[in-house]
Each structure stands twice: as C-alpha cells, then as structure tokens.
Length: 58
Image 1 (cartoon, helix red, strand yellow):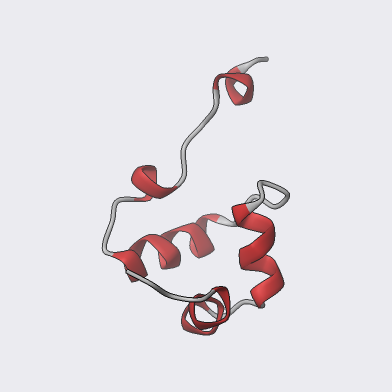
Image 2 (cartoon, rainbow, N blue to C red; image 1 turned 135 degrees about the horizontal axis):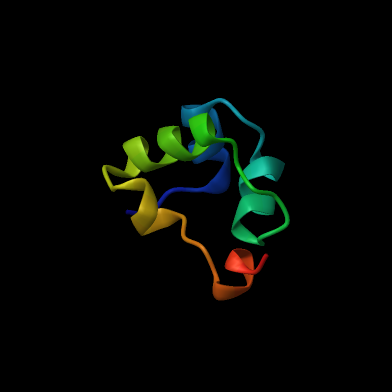
C-alpha cells in the first residue's frame, strides 16, 4: 500500500512529523497510536512494531 506520511498522519490523528519520528525510531508511539496504525494497515500490532534484543535488556 502506497501512502504518504501526511495521509497516514491524518488517518490516525497525529502530525506528519510524528509518523516520521516513529519511522526513524526517534519516537515510540503510545499503545493507542500503535493500535490505530495497525488497524489502518489491517495487521497485528506485532507485525508493525517489535522489540529489538537491546530493548529487552534490564
């Protein structure tokens, strides 16, 4: 699916800059936003967002 950051941002109610920051790994979306994005793409959340091994270090 080809969609711009601006189009996705409008669909899920955030700024284009927020989508860009999520894509660059500079911003971790809230649970609600992650669910909205997954719903938009009709995918499970864990197909779009996932943990890196370094995220699991305590």
